Image 1 (tube, rainbow, N blue to C red):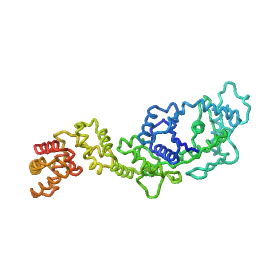
Image 2: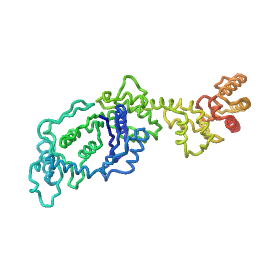
Image 3: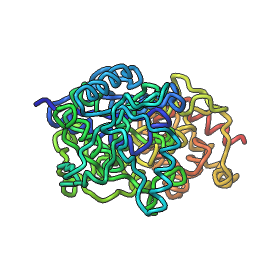
Image 4: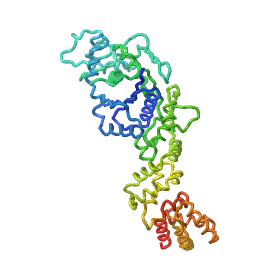
Length: 466
């Protein structure tokens, strides 16, 4: 058997973090078993589904590196097939046309509520002759569900789960306007797509019993189900906007790397010993459903941010430079030319050591693209006292005589500090303020080397003259 999984979001909203983890688990399970990972856009709710949401889903999956192996399937294009299957079930005696009116359904619900029972359809058209139908009435099609025994699901995460068939009524599979219900469409699509494993949130577990009955009614092989726990906020409540970023693309805007987010989501409900930093290749090799727990996970943004810092330090410098330039684009006062790009790339090893997010990284790199005279933070301006400016004026000549490699400027700084009877920090701190406009930066020797002779001397001269 070739494993085939699917991620099936509804484009009625953005791709949220819970959906991203579901997609990741489907992707990893398929890859681990040498199978295929598919995408189905469940857009049958035409009033609420939007093209914007579809685009955001596709963009979010692409950003995470979770694009499907085949062209996405759009559920709305398959309505004729859904209706065809419903009619096949009627012909086989596994479903029937129901002419119950809205008023009758309301009376059923009210009676059930008065008697303390859950509202269920009473099956009044289950064995009734369609010839008795009211003239002009448009019927729905209902599944003729088993009324005795149990429906049992051997879930790969939750274990064996079962429900008494007496607790389930004859659900509608085709509405009176000929459109399918969600539960019916999902079964038909999963069958036609050859899905072998349905991995989804455990909020769908109650739907599974009804869907299994459709599989049985059609004589189709049932896929294996795996219902994974939901993600909650740090307070244990259902994850919402008040807990922080919800849309996957918000995490991009907030400066998280996709590999860091995937690493975090992988460990959110799945474990492999004490391993914390897990690459995509390692995840594919290790992931299986027996490592998924049953308890809900809690979103921890502090831990995600820590992981992001780890992945930033491992990331390619050229890639990070491109990200910084993208995020700084359009910022007033910056010139993002080739020279700025070279400076950022040159200093990237030092810049990324201090950053937790790409937003931090871009902010710390911005000084490399500024033009003279620099804007000074208050703390930096306070460092540039008259004595400090005089010290910098003398330092400039010593630096100009070097080849501006990192080792050369370091030696020049130390020699000058010794000549002036100063500690290295007494020279480096006003120099840092002059070069960056702030009191923090990577090592001063690396900063000088990244800026280069001409730019460094111009910044020192501007600070001395300020």
